[in-house]
Image (cartoon, rainbow, N blue to C red; front, side):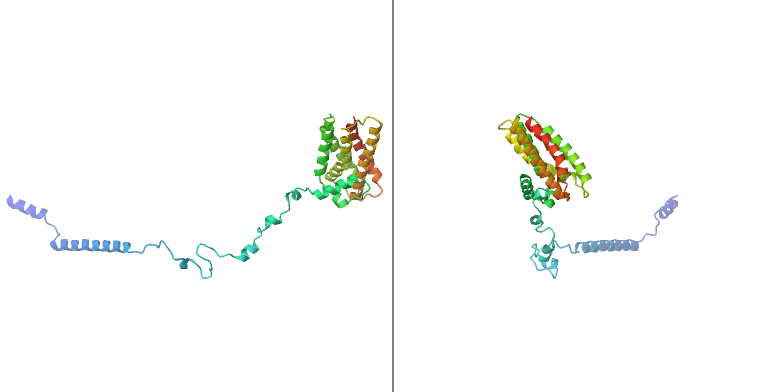
Amino acid sequence: MMSNLAQFDSDFYQSNFTIDNQEQSGNNSNAYGNLYGSRKQQAGEQPQPASFVPPEMLMSPGYTGQFFQPASNSDYYSQSSYIDSFDEEPPLLEELGIHFDHIWQKTLTVLNPMKPADGSIMNETDLTGPILFCVALGATLLLTGKVQFGYVYGLSAIGCLVIHALLNLMSSSGVSYGCVASVLGYCLLPMVILSGCAMFFSLQGAFGTVSSLVIIGWCSLSASKIFISALDMEGQQLLVAYPCALLYGLFALLTIF
């Protein structure tokens, strides 16, 4: 019985492991440890990226300025298109199409019916003066106790449409609606003078009738002169003046009555 147990123990604990194997495994573990330590040391000894680079390394050989102060390039600024662009821009009034010298010349042409009209200036769609004269006519009528702004604007729009159609039928070159409105509006200035006179004395009499006829002839003569000059319609001034006289006669009726 005892001999069987001893044999079982020897068989149970029998193994190929020896002391030499233990020493070899220890040497291998040390070798692994040394290898891990050497790698860790190499990783720790790697150079860190420099946080500061000298200016000499950043500057190119052709750079002549100081650090953080770029050198001025005169060629770049001379070739820039936006330099001095603000100084070269036209004034705001000219961009809007408002020329005071043209307005003044047109006004003088209307006030002097015998003065020759400049067709290059009159053939423009300038509505600054006409709007001012229409507002002035309505304001003078308002001072006389007549609220006629709607009639002034309505007659102006319809009259411009009719005169525009007639001129396009009569002339070979044709004319734009804005040009017709501009000329008829500027020639409304004498009617503003008549309306201003109505603030001081009544026009419902012989003097008022004669004054109205003179103002109507003045307005129609000025308008026909400008149309003839702008559209090269020589010899047709009376034909153009007749419908213009009818239009300004309506404004005269608003002023008198």
